[in-house]
Image 1 (tube, one colour):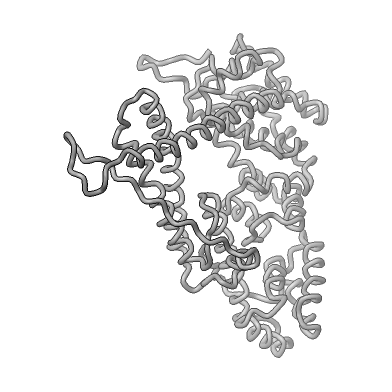
Image 2 (cartoon, one colour):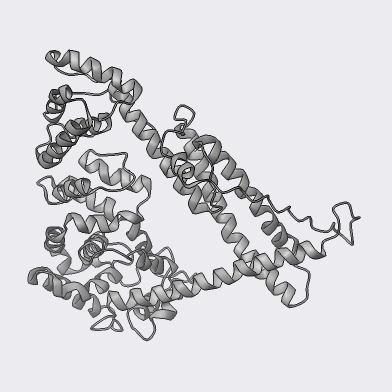
Length: 468
C-alpha cells in the first residue's frame, strides 16, 4: 500500500511505477495496436473539448492552423500522421491529443494507495472519487468520445508512467475485448504484475463505464447543489436590498451598512440577423485586436470565472446566515454585490475589442465571442499575407492579381492559404486535391494555375504567423 513519510505526506506514486513492470517493455505493441484502430471519426469525437491553444498544437502536426474546430479533412490528415513513418511526429501528436485528459493522473490530489484501491472497487468508488476531484474531472471529460480514442488516451497515460498510470492500466482492462490478442495480453500481464506488489488491488477492477457513470452522478449532484446556491444568492441579494438602509444613512456599530449594487438595466434584445453578424469577422476590428489584448481579456475571463466560483460559496454562506437569522459576513456580501460589476466591465471590454454586443450574460458567452474574434483575426491575417505571395515568374501576372485581391479579401484566398500550407506534402494528396477543387469553385476561373502551383509547393508566403 502507499506509505506515508514521517511528515505524513502521501506517497506520490501510490500504486508504484508501471515503468518498472517487466510487461512495460512491450508498451509499444499496445500503442501501435491502438493507433491502428483510430479513424478520422474518432478524432472528430474529441474536438469539442479542446481549447484553441490545444487545437493549434494538434493541427500544427499536419501544418494546419487557425481552425475553430477540427474539420473532416484535418482529421483525415491527423489520422495519417498518427500512422505515418515519422514516429517522432506521431508520438508528439498522441501527446498533444491526450494532454487535456492526462492532467488528472499526476496525483495532484495527493491520493493514497488506499484511495486508489477504493476507486477500483464498485462499492467504494463513489467515496474515493470525492477525494479525487482531478480524476473525477478527467473521467467526465471523456463524455462523447469513442472507445478507440479513449483507449489511445489511457495507453498514452500508461506509457508515460505518470504517478497514477496504474489507474489508467486498471481502466484499460475493461477494453481489452476490442483489442488485438497480443496487445490485450500485454495489459493483462502488466496488471497481474502490478497486483503482486499491491495485495488489495482487485483481480477484475471496476470497468471504465461503471466508474464514469459514478463520476457523472457525482458531477450532477454537484451541479444541482451549485444551482441551489445560485438561487440562494439571488434570494439573499433581494433580502439584503430590502433591509439595507439608504446609502446616506449613518454608520451603525463598528461598520457602515453594506451598499447594494444597483440592478443593471436589461439590454434590448438584438435581432437574430444582427446578432449573427456581430462576430462573423466583418464587424471585428482586426487592426485594434492584438495578441496583448487577447491575453488580457483571457486573463480577465479566468479571474471572472474564479469570482463566480467564490461567489457561489459566499451565496451559500449568506443563505445559511439568513436561515440562522444572523447577519452575513461583510466579505460574502461584497463578493455577491461586486460580481455583477466585474462581469459588466469585462463584457464592455470584450465588446469594445471585438465589435458588436454580447447579449447573453454568461462567462461562456464571453469566451465564445473571444474565440470567434480570434478566428476572424487569424483568417484576415492569413488572407492579408497573400499580398506578399511569391512563386514562379511564369505566374507573375496571376500572382499580381492575387496580391491585389488579398488587400480586399477576394473570394477563394483563404482556401489558397490552406493549399499553400500543404503544398508538396506527399501525405496530404487527397486534402490538396479537395482544396484545389474548392478553390476552382470560389476563385476566378483563370486563377486555376495558381492553385496547381500551390499544391505542388511552388508558392511561398512570408514566415510571419499572426499572433492571436
